[in-house]
Image (tube, rainbow, N blue to C red; front, side, top):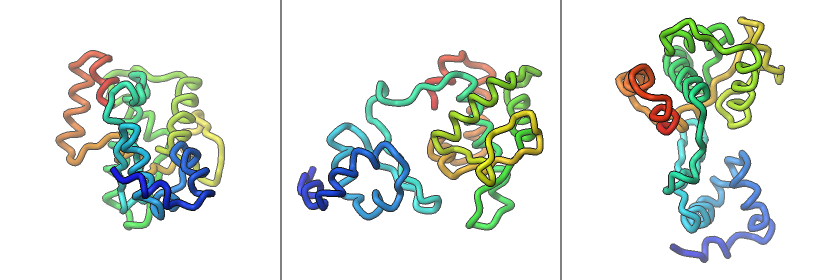
Length: 190
């Protein structure tokens, strides 16, 4: 590894590096990619890049550094990924898909294969968390209102990186894994 990439950064950029690694700042990382990759490699992370969606993702080589999601969170990520793939086919290349809260709730019920539904509080908490990690955003800066089935959410391309599957068959395998596996297997997969 070459540490000179890190020392070649201007002093202000060196101070910004820890902040940026913990926040969204695509262009900083894009401009200083070699230094960011070096810094992350030193700590056991690999920098992945999705140029099409302009997303960088730091992935740990060690499982203890990875986020752990509860079953409902994992299932909701799966729902968002499935809806993303279904809607992206119909859009131009420059747009992220938009779905309604009603579509999300219905797909959640479909994937779980039962009438089990989350309560209003659980939906709001879950969707706020997924917005915080950059998987969804509300339109026009509105707050998330899960009572409004017509409220719209924009699905971000980052949902493709958090759940790295390439084909519909792989997506179906994740759904089967949920239906036949234990909660722990599904939670550890994401």
